[in-house]
Length: 211
Image 1 (cartoon, helix red, strand yellow):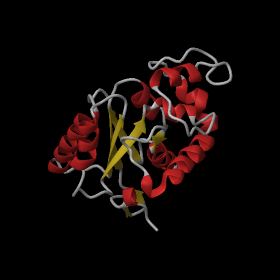
Image 2 (tube, rainbow, N blue to C red):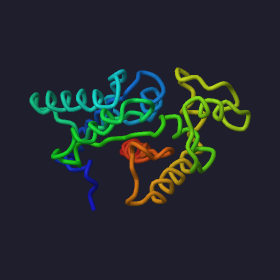
Image 3 (cartoon, helix red, strand yellow):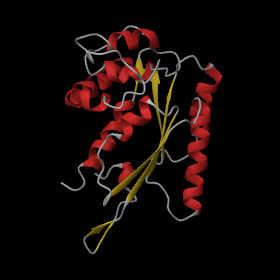
Image 4 (cartoon, helix red, strand yellow):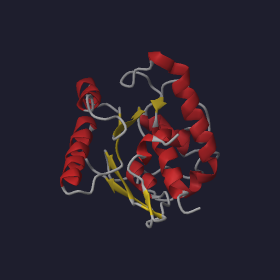
């Protein structure tokens, strides 16, 4: 069965139409740099990563604005991904992010969140975590000798390469974490939680288009 993000991918005379994915991130460093590191063949797909969109609901607002402009110009995105942290943003802004997407085709617009922050995704490469953890503790955990082996820095662009061999473990842990919450999941309150693996799975698939 075709996946939702494949619906605009067509073949004509043996040529695959270019897929365009928009990824709008909260900041310009950790998440944006990490997601840009996925190798997606330019001849088959284009992933546009925009960083520095601000906080939770402003990320979604910018993503929806860019989505509308792309549709008006006749170059729509196959999917739009809004990436942000729960962090210490007001609950009303975090929850409004989800409200902004209600009524929009969920095959087009996806919210990718991390509670408390994106670095939880990095930690899941090393361990399955069920107890709450804050940003500073995450940084300390990642800086241990048996983790990254050096002090964690949000602007370090080598993190992707340091973690890529452990990607299957991170995906397994992230899926289990959400499965354990089940229908009771509350993205705003449940620390730790993240669905970064959903976007990662798509980027992996796009990277295999020329294989």
